[in-house]
Length: 213
Image (cartoon, rainbow, N blue to C red; front, side, top):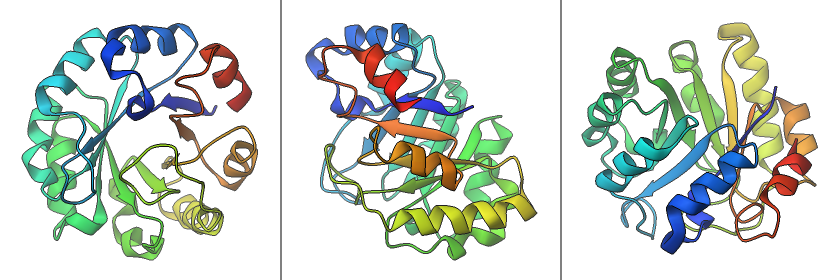
């Protein structure tokens, strides 16, 4: 079953608790948090204390996407807080297995994230050790960007290789997801659709989520 993960990057930050409740009541499966440091990407978002408070009020699993140059500083803490999904970028880590093992030891669903231009071949050797791969379908840093169709081939290639090495691997896509590209993404092998501006700011969150399903 496809999971819908609204991205809080596009939410109304002045009414964050209300926004979280609205997407939960609308049928969201996962709450997606983009953590940006102003270095790896040109933006700043949630810090650790806000992540902890969001986790405390969320009634659905929380998915933390670390868009930071030093993800190793976050991993143990996120595990201790009971965050269900954590992904960090292949482009920022020299020793992937070492960081993956930190999360696995905390029983966290562990993911590797890839920028649009990063080949999926760079993580083939570690696919058996992770739970999901997050494919960015926009260049990370800002919400509301246009979807990059080049990711379709990446997803198909990843799905084919994962079916051999790790059939249970989930593929997540983030960036410009809407009701037009969602069917193609699912057909290509995606399990988790992250959507920000397509859901937040609209009149009916439930309608938006159902249209993605």
